[in-house]
Image (tube, rainbow, N blue to C red; front, top):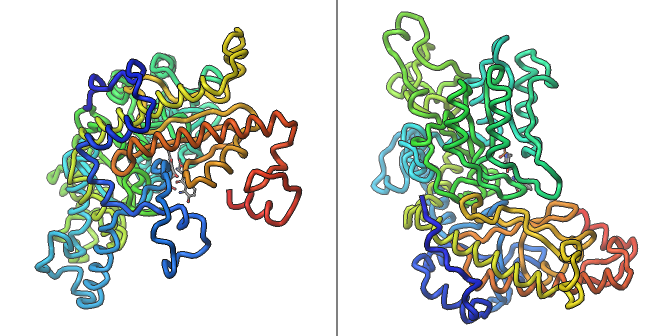
Length: 516
Ligand SMILES: Cc1ncc(COP(=O)(O)O)c(C=O)c1O
Ligand SMILES: Nc1c(O)cccc1C(=O)C[C@H](N)C(=O)O
């Protein structure tokens, strides 16, 4: 795992606040060349309502894209590889499934393209290639995993998850409980934060809830990184603790994969699921991923042949079946050992091509190096935000004991880099969100808002720079100061339009609100 020991103490360096310092960090960044692998939308790209590049201003500055936690940017290679995939299809037709091409390292026959993706993905999540399948979608994979790993009994039937889980995970768990005819109210154990002000969950709290419900809990499901707070959970410790109580453990890695250097095999995780459209940069809704620890993927041929099972029960489809007999159409399911045996359908080769293109870029570096840069980048963001926050307080406010209530914003993500990934979640003072977002958008800054008061800012080490972070904080500081002035003016923020001026119930305003 990447270490935080190399994190500079920015606060002790007077020059750290200057743009020249941010630029010097970029010039020393060993991963700086990777930014060129991505298409960064220009400010004009984002603001015009067409995609055509005809007649556009090529000199328009690039946006400051800090939203890789929601949708990662497009690698340049993606269109090249997808074009080649289209040629593979147009020139080979159905033979594209099996024909070995001279270009096969980039364009495997489609019948093997899932294996190629799993092999390239494995290192990203610290797994052996046979512990990973690139398949399905996150929520569908979560259902498939729970069908196999959530086997409730009268004695053990509960599922522990967080109270503020991403809605899809909450619904999936709820429906699995109902599917097994258990009562949701006494089966779904929700870990709630201590207070709305501090929405993170301490490891101690998680462990104590595990302890309290140890004998009746079947499954623990948590996110590697929490989508709202950006908190990175202690996966190895929590997993080991739950295991010591006989509980199965699954992790939703939507916000962790490609962000932090997880070691799923060594941490003995039972299963994990993730999507590939955030830090994995494979495109909106791209095919997802699933990890099944090798201990659960074994196939005992003797038992299987004698009709006694021989493999972990699961929901099956032909693509999880042994390749050597798959096309014999014998209707006797023999699972592929490992995660591939959990596949159901033949996967979209178009989608896998996009994942493979993105993985080519990941393979130009390592997760360890990306994480090392990420710790510095996010640490720098935190440092500059703290500086900006105190400079937005009036001298009067700085002197008072009520400094906390006067702060224009606070960071709700843990301050310890061990407990966060790239993302910082920033909670703004009441009513500021809309006003700040308008200003950020005007200046080509892309972050993500969670109403009523949080923005999530995620510098992504593959393509963001220290200068991006510096520029963002300066624009953000101005946006906060602008919002403070507007609110101080006694204007209702609901009446403030796209350009920050007052607007009342115009069509334009409605349209803008819908887009948000
Ligand atoms: C933590 C988390 N879980 C689940 C989902 C849903 O994923 P999908 O729609 O790809 O199934 C997302 C993102 O949309 C997410 O962030
Ligand atoms: N998939 C999304 C979509 O189609 C629209 C808006 C947002 C999304 C997301 O993926 C949200 C994402 N899970 C997040 O935490 O930001």
